[in-house]
Length: 523
Image 1 (spheres, helix red, strand yellow):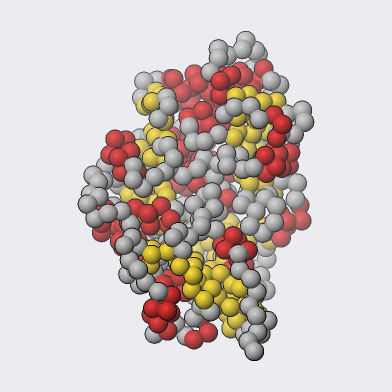
Image 2: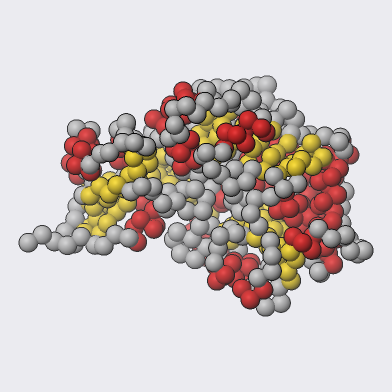
């Protein structure tokens, strides 16, 4: 076991002493809807465009109806329920309904193809799936199906096997199976326990200072832990409320925000880039916001400054991954913020840097980012070998390359798998992307490696430009040559109307790589 001092929450720049203590609601969140109802049945809980806002009592009733429909189809403790729905209240109700019965939930991206949907549901052994409408020919055999239309009918009369009243009970039971994007192969199911969910929501509430006065606006997909944890479970556990917005559009987003009056929302860099690119006459009322969060991918410091200055909102950048339940680091809301970093370890979590020999480094050197603490997953469902590779030396190995500064703020250098070795020189795409964002015309930038018969790999840059600006690749290259060493200059710069994204909103580098043909030697 390596020995060195990792960064822990509470170091310089950390959370203030007046953050709330997390004892508002039960630690096992399967009991949350009922506990909120008992505390204040008429207080607002959650809403969407279709249903409007539900009170605590109304939401608990909806969860009970879903539970009875699930139980009538044979769902009991230890089972897995799938849900393939767009963002809406019923998806959250299905989550709590499964938990109420002692079952776990796996959310399915509603844009997946039939074969991809079949793979996920079969891989996790789901016994039931909730769908917008029936699509039985795409599903595994013997899988029960319930549609939204059926959930809207009166609840069946059925005896429920409820969980014990003890809020500590069931913490080691499986709660969520979240599937990774599959960028390194077939998607893997990340096993998250109720103990992980308890620790993660407590960490978010304390780290962000959430209280019953907070109101989140959900715009990220609910098949991902960011949407589930940051925008729904954390505010609900803190006693606050959540509004589920419809499909994100930069043209309508601020209209939705002004109507909902949330205190925060969480988004990805691509969304902030689209908002920053709105016409100059877009001057929304953002006065309800305490802060906005950026996650899922590193955000260029230049874009952070643009968003903060233009919209008058404090933008907090964080970092995390599904294997650690959601977020592990965040710039403090009420402390020192350092643009260009993803902040300090969130309460209860540890972040360190590890070298190739499995030793922790404490001199500010670059290495692999590793995480420990109660938010770390149990493992990958049915994949003990891959679990053993990821959980080593008592740490979760993220595959990200970074370093910690003197105050414990994490600076991400790149993904280990994204690093380009050009003629023996290490090239980090994120460094090139950051410099590209220094150009006033660049809206988005992504750099990937292309195979090269001589150099091994060369960097290729894909960029999109701000509205109304016309610029050549040659001009961009001239800009880079004064700011980067020659070996870091992209071999090609490709200008696109929009850089492609995956369903979570991250720039889709695997797709960009697949579209590149290997270089041909000259001559």
